[in-house]
Length: 475
Image 1 (cartoon, rainbow, N blue to C red):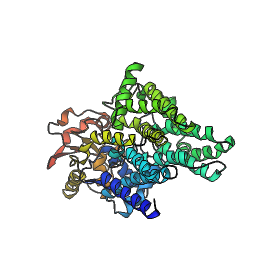
Image 2 (image 1 turned 30 degrees about the vertical axis):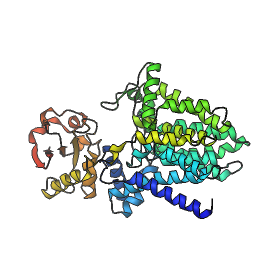
Image 3 (image 1 turned 60 degrees about the vertical axis):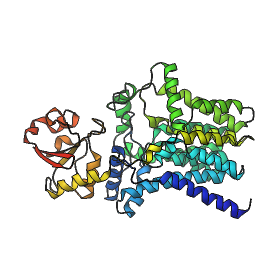
Image 4 (image 1 turned 90 degrees about the horizontal axis):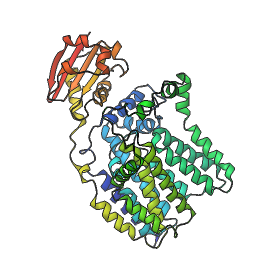
């Protein structure tokens, strides 16, 4: 095929993927509490408060790395704090990763199989879903796909700088969210296994370790607070006992039951039954080469790891890196056979299970929270310089998100800066925003309320804007 035809195919694929992932992007986006937390921290960075850490993870007192924040901050700043700009940029990252895979696949495979393989990866439900929803628990996925693509298609023998940069990328992915660690560890073993000069793996490891520099510096500045909180005071037990997140789901304590549970969850994320993957790996094992064999065995090891580890606490996002790894392995396994047409069958199955609900209009729009904050400011419920804090009562998330970053972001954007979620005890004013129709202030009982002081609730003043009720409680 001529260069012009290849270029035209590339552009066509780019347009198809971009259209599919960005369709009704802004109108369907639900303003999630985790995203609100993230943009609040990004805004703090823009306003001159840099950070060495990212969002807190659910394991003990461990925080993620800050790369996710700093990657999005320039776009957020240049767009004048336009939330939609972050959605579009996030989608572009997912599109770029797919196009990078496609270009890399073309080095070894014809256009049509490469095209089908790219679409197969891009159409798994979780890839589609999180391409439309920025979040530290998923925004690393396109970087993981690029990392795996480089690892498989590129050459690193005696390429010390490339090894260092690849390690830096892998380490950064792990710091953004620890759930990616098993995949990156296996990728490291893959690199070591196929590297002729084994000693060069140290360049990769140096890059990976260096990626943790911000977290190490934070620990040094704060007397190893994350390590002490997690392991000395044993806060990791709240993860093991599934007590750190209200209403959190756990896996099954029985290994066999949990294996079936993880099997079903992965099938849902992949858009087809995991049996199809197992069948393909089994049938094409003899046709595969050492690289494909390593990836298939790694897939099995990852499944066994999840079966054991996720007996304690389960979050769907814990499976995301494994889902990407599995579809990556499946596509490469099939591409290296004469049966690449099977990818059409998989695509049809994926299309049948496509999560069409992602295009529905959002039920949790940011404008609702912005309007409540604007009302608070216009009615002078608080003044600039007030020592105040925020609690949210949400009909969508119950007790899970009492700190109310949805409101905190818009308050901070207007230079009304609340105390942190750890400073309720030193706050003079408490603002409670509720969209729960049956909410009873007298029955509100959580750590935040007790820190502020329940005795002050007798001084509560009540306001209402649309479906949001605002309570102001002063000491």
